[in-house]
Amino acid sequence: MAVGHEGLDLYEFDQMLYADRDAGWICGVDEAGRGPLAGPVFAAAVILPKEHRIEGLNDSKKLSAKKREALYEIIVEQAVAYCVCSVDEAEIDRLNILAASMLAMKQAVEGLQVRPDAAYIDGNRVPELEIPAIPVVKGDGKSASIAAASILAKVSRDRFLCQLDRQYPQYGFAKHKGYPTKEHYACIGKYGISPVHRKSFLKNLKDHIQ
Image (cartoon, rainbow, N blue to C red; front, top):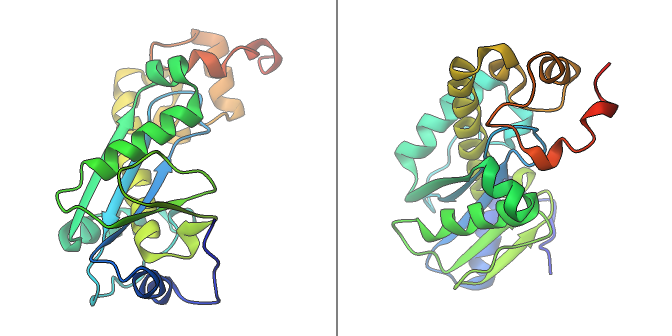
C-alpha cells in the first residue's frame, strides 16, 4: 500500500516513516530516464542523515539544472550512503523499460554501503528486494530521501547524455537528453538510429518523421 502525504514537509514525512517503522535506516529510491528514446535509465538510492537537513532539497523536476548540480554535490557529501546505477539501452530493449527501471533500482539499493531496514520507492511499483519495499506515489515531492534520490539519478543521467553528445554530436543529446522532442526525431530522420537509441521505442518512427 502506498504511503499518504499527510500534509507534511519532506523531512517531516521521512520522520513519520522512521516513527512508523522504528527503523535503523531507511532509503529513498527514484529513477530517471524512463521516457527518452536513447541512453540508459538511471536509478539512485539514498540514506540521508536523520538529524541534518539539506536546504533547498526538492523534487528534481521542480529545480533548475544549476540547482540540481549544486544539490548533487551536497547530497553525495552528506549522505549516510548513496548508490547510483544504470541499465543501458540494450537491456531496456531486451527486458522492457519497466523491468529495466526495476532492475536499476534494485541494483542501487543493493549497492548501498549501509544496509537500510526499508526502501521507499517513488511511484506505485517496487522492485523485488530483500528488505521491505514501499511505494510512495509522487514520492519525490513528499519525501526528502526520495527527492535526494531523484536529484542523483537525474543529474547522473544528464551528465551521461552530455558524454553521449560528444560521441554523437549530430543528435543533440546535450540539449534534449534523449527525450522525444521534434528536434530529436528530426535528427534521427536525418542521421538514422544510433547505437545508443532504444530500438523498442522507435518501432513507429515513421509516424514522427516528416
